Length: 161
Figure 1 (tube, rainbow, N blue to C red):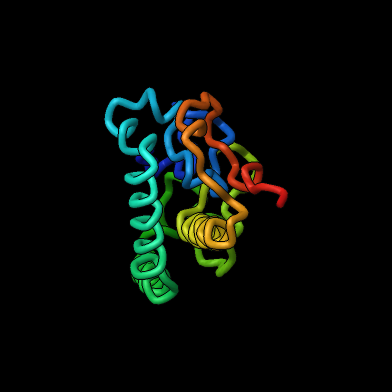
Figure 2 (figure 1 turned 90 degrees about the vertical axis):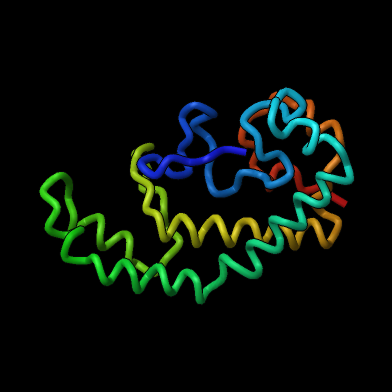
């Protein structure tokens, strides 16, 4: 599990440059889960891994919902003047991206990540992952906990049943 810093959201450079909104919830550590001293035993045990997935489900279906994202939008509107007047960067351009109402979060420069669109895109991706789990198309198995592949894109884990 990775805490993203808020200057490089969804770009945890200490992990892998390919980490993005499609990072699989089944393999949420930078390296093999089994090697993670804090979460390794939890994420490699089938029972606790299933509990973890249900906690993810609960968070994304009860907390990170459209009403919550709408509240973030309202807060953004409240600080608009501060953001657009900031001389440290192109505030107007950033603002336009932030309040675009889309899930376009990656502007291709490897550095710029826009918070609210990224949050929307990540939420959509996680809800799709949970649906794939429910349908049996995305299946966790204990060997995932020993894989050294970093930031696995969940779409690559979907079984072709």
